Length: 197
Image (cartoon, rainbow, N blue to C red):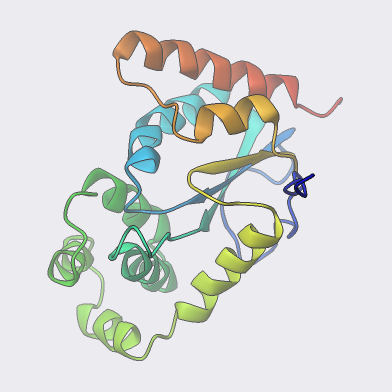
């Protein structure tokens, strides 16, 4: 009988994580994602809607999990996001990379750096020296310990719910009607995992 993959988050949310929302929120949603993954790209607007709808009830945590065998620009994109974070603009770069997912080669990444008003020379230097690579690898390792094998992968309050896993493993919306239905499912999955107050 094959060993079951872990379903618990192996690394607690900490000060090094990229977090949106209050630590007191009843729901913590951790996402492992790859900026070049088409499924992550399709999930991005849906996830934004759900986070907006849940408001202060959810804390969102993003972790890198570039699948470099399939997505040759994913690791560089993750490092650029970290470089942007070092200049206080991680989330702006995060959103921009998902919106411009079809163009993540090095030249385009530097265009996005300039578009956000970042110090491009500093980013280029940090990329060349792989300053942020260890941070990206740390996320990958925590994902592997948590049983992440593809993206996007979500954990709600430290657990990978079966219903969520099935939906996130590639069965993402292709029509607006289906997308609306899945957004409602996300809402209820998150709501059902709120801690009692």
